[in-house]
Each structure stands twice: as structure tokens, then as C-alpha cells.
Image (cartoon, rainbow, N blue to C red; front, side, top):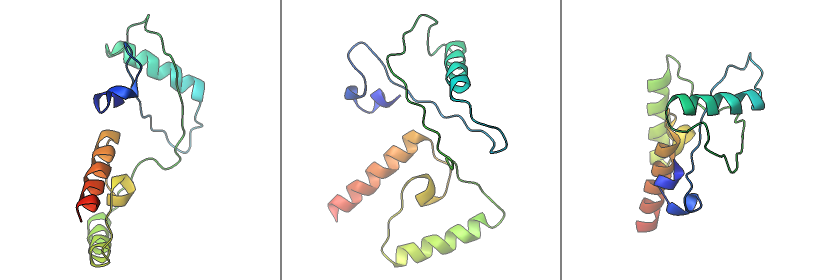
Length: 120
């Protein structure tokens, strides 16, 4: 719910939200089905009412939206982070920190890094 971060993320009397849906590369992504499924599930969860109007929507298919872990994850990440720290590089977000983060976490992570940069 982006409007929880900023009241300007939705017009007065309205709300805003985003939904993430993951899918296997073996299955074709269907935009219309995804929109219908998301709306149905939001109604089932009590987040939307059946008569709520959707003012606008945007579906964006991100090919690689999630970090995929493997057995060498911890060791590899330690090596990479040591190298980056020694190089003075900061990381943020899912692929900067190479860990699963919700979008709220990603936004907060970017904010923390930007505040650090501003102070130094």
C-alpha cells in the first residue's frame, strides 16, 4: 500500500496498492487472467469490496523478480559483500543485497542507503 508511505500516492478518498505474482518460466503469463485473479483474491481477503472501483492499473512483467538461492549462496554472498565493501560500494534492494525483500523492504533499503550517502 504505497499510500502508507506517502499520502500523495493516491487521490483523496482513494487508496493504492500493488500486488506481486510469481510464475514459472514454463507457464505463459496471462495479463488478463492475472488481473482477474488478483482482484478476486483481494476481495476474498477482505482488502477490496466487490463494488470497489479500480481507477487505474498497470501490469508490469518483470522477468527476474526474485532472487534464487542455491547451495553456494552464503559463501558466495560473503565473498561478494567483502569485495564490494573494500571497494567502497553500497548495495540496496533485492539484487543489490541478493536476498528476498518485499517491495516495502526495497523502498526502505533504498531510503536508508540514500540517507547514508547524504550524510557522508
